[in-house]
Image 1 (tube, rainbow, N blue to C red):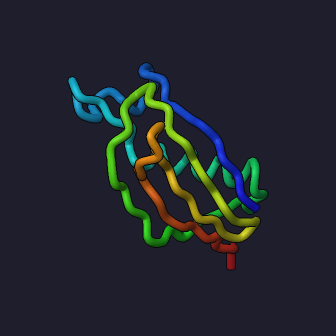
Image 2: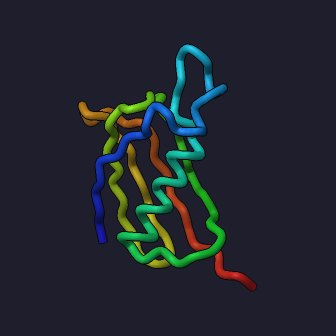
Length: 101
């Protein structure tokens, strides 16, 4: 299954202060958390731990900047790509659900 969603981080988000004063950027972990939220909501990704693979951050994301998340996957794994308004890549990677033993 494929899903696509536009997203932006509010300028007053609590993760931004200190994440480069005067030149704030969205932390990579916030982008990954948004990818997981989207995968769980739209792909049915199972709850629990994830194993991240081949994650690359290619460009910074600024507060209020609109980005496009593209996900493909299912309840066990997904790939993601994040692009800017011009279609330029920002981040990409894969995640796999790690069932509890």
